[in-house]
View 1 (cartoon, rainbow, N blue to C red):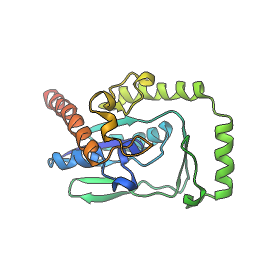
View 2 (cartoon, helix red, strand yellow):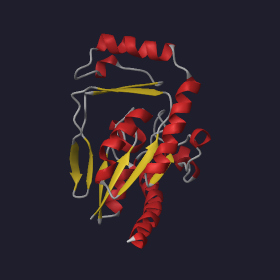
View 3 (tube, one colour):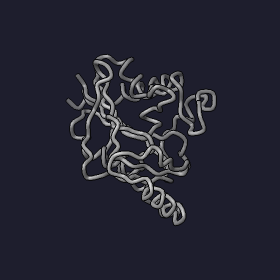
Length: 214
């Protein structure tokens, strides 16, 4: 069975409100002959996506990365262990990890802080980060990471940041606003299903290329 690793933020992991239905989930549903392992979780920065990608990419035949926005920062505690949960016979996702602390422009809710983090400290960290945020500094780093992913992964795309990354974006493929269900521009099940169909077409081309090399 072909093994596929997927990496990203909540645009790849799904959200609580959508029962974590996401394009990797639907990709596995429509391709029963592949194993999809999803190393995504909400709020991850590009640097955190890189960390999970580097830790796991060599275990997979194909790696797919969905780029996130540049206005983020993630802390990963040294006690963090990468664990996957079985969801179906051919789909696994990253287990909830309180050792991961995420900051983004959408705000920070200290009530959600768990694990090794102290809420008072995280609020101070959040304020310091965004009081001193430098968009150009963050954008240059994320653009460099996007180029790295293009070199190392088998397929890389973005949600709606084509102007930053010069990558294929799902916003160009489907009627984006029709399928967005919240202010974070997340898709509901119907949008995730369409996104998976689009990725599946790309995946077929990648698989053919692999077999041709053999």
